[in-house]
Amino acid sequence: MPDTLCSIYLTEYVQRVFFMVRSKKALELCMGILLIVGAFLLSREVVQVVSQNRKAAKTIVVDAGHGGDDPGMVTEELKEKDLNLAVAKKLKKYLEDAGYCVEMTRTEDKGLYQEGTRNQKVQDMQNRVAFIGEKTPLLTVSIHQNSYPDPSVKGPQVFYYADSVEGEKLADSIQDQMNERLQIESPRQAKGNTTYYLLKKSPGVLNIVECGFMTNPEEAAYLQQADYQEKVAEAIGEGIRGYLEQKE
Ligand SMILES: [Zn+2]
Image 1 (tube, rainbow, N blue to C red):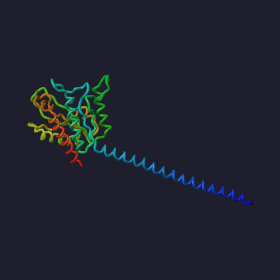
Image 2 (cartoon, helix red, strand yellow):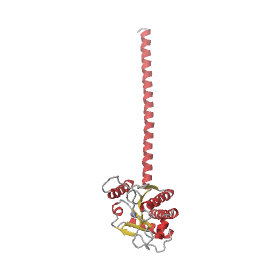
Image 3 (cartoon, rainbow, N blue to C red):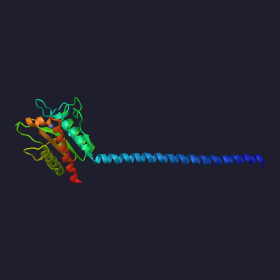
Image 4 (cartoon, rainbow, N blue to C red):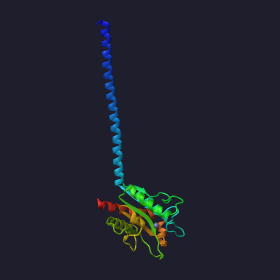
């Protein structure tokens, strides 16, 4: 074989080897990049799942009763829906400061129904129950204000579903804190109930907290004061904390 032909073959051979080495390196580089990207995406996914679980593990739902077209109890100067929202917002802050994650069913003067729906009240209640089901919280508290024909009747009262052992424990804990911190003269006891829609239909532990009587002039005056609302929120928050700590 002439020298020149031999050198052409040799050059081609070297080039081919060089190309193979280069493409192998490129392949290795690609694989490396893919592995790094894959590991990054996976770790992000894991972090997301862990933080979601941690969030769900410490979530409390705070439900401000009524809202929008449904004012709840109304007196000359007060609408129940406004007092409920004011206390609920303060309770949210208190619980968040204590390290819990709070989900509110509403944060403004709005019900959980679609405008123009024939039975807004039914849709509103169904949506509240669905909201609680979605959040899978540790527990739910629904904030309300009471009323009674006899204006001398007053004092906070907590309701639980009558068959719920955990509901009763939570209610006792909140009731005790409210009686003590709000210095209630004739303290009430938490009460079981089987007819309230939210108590019957909500998944998990739920209490309805009636903060006071809007029909009692003295209590109605207190209930509209921001610092009394703060005290009410603190008492409910401490009741929740006490219940959860004893459970751990
Ligand atoms: Zn109400």
